[in-house]
Image (cartoon, rainbow, N blue to C red):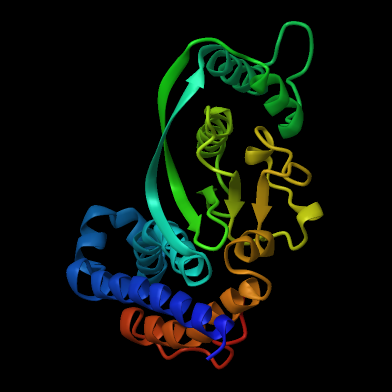
Length: 277
C-alpha cells in the first residue's frame, strides 16, 4: 500500500472515531428532548419548528470536538511521514529579556491604534528581525504548541499552531505570541514554527479574506502562515492535501445519511452526497 493511502486511512480513522463519539452523545448521552425545549422556550417553540433547534443542538456538540480533531489528524499525518509527533507539547527554552519586551511591543502596536496614526500592518519578517536584535539576561520560558513534530530522517523539529479556517482575533494573537517566542529562544529548539489553517474556505491563498487573523498576520504573504495544501504537504509531502480531501468526502455521505435518519428521524434527500469539501 502506498504512503498516500496509509495517510488517507489514518485520517479517516481519526474522523470516524470523532464522529462516532458525536453520534453516541447526541443519540444516547445527551439527546434533544422536545418536551424540555418546549417547556424552557415556549415562545421559540410556538414560532419555529422543533427541528431547527434540534439541528442547533447537534451543531453545538459537533463543533467543539471537531476543533480538536484537526490536531489529531495532523499528528497521524506527521507520524506517517516524519516518525514522531505530539499535540499539546510543551517546548522549554530561554529568551533574552529584551526580546520578550520587543515581542510585547510588536503585539501592542498591532493591537492598538497609536496617537500618531493608524495601526501597524503586520509583517512577520520585519517584526522577527527587530525582535531578534534584542539581548539581555535569558529568561526561562515555556510555550505549549498545538503540534510538535520531529523528523527522524533530518533530525529537525517543527512546531505548529493549528486553528480553524476562520479563527478569531484572540486565538490568533495568542498563536502569534507563541510563534515569536519559539523563534526567539536561545538556542532555538525548533527549526521552523508556523501558524496553520487546515483548509481555505476562500479557495486560493491570495483570496483568503477573513479580517480577524489579518490583524496579526499578513495572511496572504507572511511565510510563517500555512493554509490548506501548504500545511498538509509540509506534514505529509506532496499529495497529502488530496488524501485529506478524499478521506473527508468519502465519509461524508455515510454520516450525513445517519444524521438524517438516526438523529433527525427524516429520510435523507437524494442529493445528500453532492456537497463535498
